[in-house]
Image 1 (cartoon, rainbow, N blue to C red):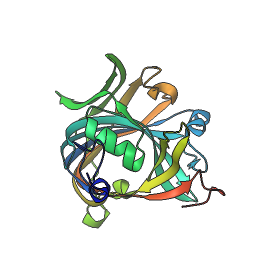
Image 2: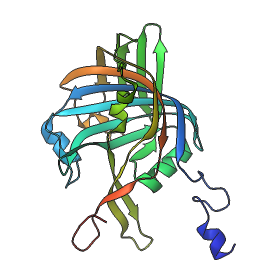
Image 3: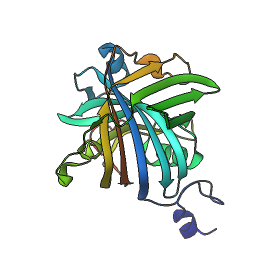
Amino acid sequence: MTPDEIRSLSAMPPANPSYPRGPYRFLDREYLIITYEADPEAIRAMVPEPLEPDGSGQVHYEWIAMPDSSGFGSYHESGVVIPCLWRGEPVNYTAMMFLNDEPPISAGREIWGFPKRWGEPRLEVRTDTLTGTLDYAGERVAMGTMTYKYEDRMAPDPSRRGAHLRKTAVNLKIIPCVTGGVRIAELVAYNLTDIHMHFHFSGPARLHLVPHINAPVADLPVRRVVEGRHFKADLTLPYGRVLHDYLAPTGEKA
């Protein structure tokens, strides 16, 4: 294998890369997002500086079903997102993610710094209830339920549809070095593009989180559920950008 061939590889391992080069297109990507109020001190402890919690005291718990994902296949995902501020700009910080497919775990961690681990999430309609579950190592650690297509929230103006998906998302990317230190420590950001909404509903919801050492979603305990949202969209996940480099001499933006 020549140096040029090595540099052209999309990912590890060289003989059978886990994923192709992006951007990555998702079709019929279906969401259940339950917004709830949590402990502000627990939120602050989970958010990496210089990001700041937005002061709402709210957290988004998400389930996503992705049946058609270019390069990644079909899988489900579940995790925790915290509304934050980056230099005054509203952003979403992804705190935890669990999914059941190796290529998007590898790509998510290696490219964008998504905090992904293997788990067994599931999003499905059970009779009249939209139901999300997350199992880790055979134990149920999260369950969310929402009324099915209760209140239509689709914006009449097509240009305003999917605004919530266009919000800047931020991850803390940590890549260790072979010497035992840290090779990469960055806040990175990305913005979804080419968004087409199929539907968007809201309604009453409930969320139950169970303490677990390796799936600590309950570290942000539920004080009060605000609402549930259920929507489906096509979208593109592009490459992102570095907001903050923790290893730079002055810690300035890269």
